[in-house]
Length: 394
Image (tube, rainbow, N blue to C red):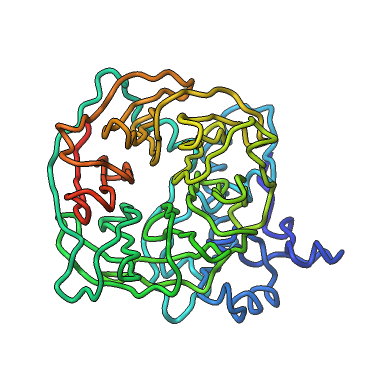
């Protein structure tokens, strides 16, 4: 059966108002179908004026070509319009030909975004008992021009750059792949959590009740005019391609946002599993199952919950702080034993990946980047605070 034509796709804002208006574009950032008037309004809006709007006809021509090539194969399943629309931006490549409008300050990148299915089939799944980490780099976050002492509260690999939060100097600091300092961006509020979104984009949360979107452009970090409101200040955030999962320490809750920043639900930890993560630091959400993994320092362990808030398992470990995923296995920071532990997604505590002797200090934050390298920061009271240790993982 032939795939749906552009005329069968309707503008979503107009549809919510009860009007059936043909869509002309889809927003690369919002995944929203828009008619021509709504497209113009979208680019005038303060929060979306730098977004990329893509001509649907460009995609339909590509989609029709693919369908024609496979038309000789027998099929009993019709093309689902909703699935086609939702998958559109997962495979599109941004070029000057496909972008209809874009903000004057936004550079168009020729970067394809792979689909979730492709990510699942190509991502590495390693035996956690055989994982090895060897140090390949160590660099200092401290700069001669720093006015105050460094207070590192996070590290993130974005594109081929490394972003470090320095709350001591109220800055986001940017380094290249080799640890060479590039630039700093001043902050108005302290940041406590960061998560990679895609390409050169990442989001942050902190003392303000707001999730902000940032971009690494060349050798600078720029905050975009896109933000999402949450009820309380946040300590950790993770984006799994479908949801933003935001951790609130003081009210012991988790907020789930969709990729447009709309609140899906709020999970109260005490009601969900009877656990507290007061003074917890980080959070992780699985890209396949949407299960949530929460380090609970107060309870001395890691809890796994469904996106609906149902507790699945709890693994006891003393004073757990940061969390990341390494090739299908969870890696958590144990600040009591000064080491990194590997835990399966079923809750099995496998072994230590790096011990105190390997690290040389008390670890605090950890991030496994898409460059297959592990980034580790150190506690503010440790002699190695202000250093970033980088490990290659095999």
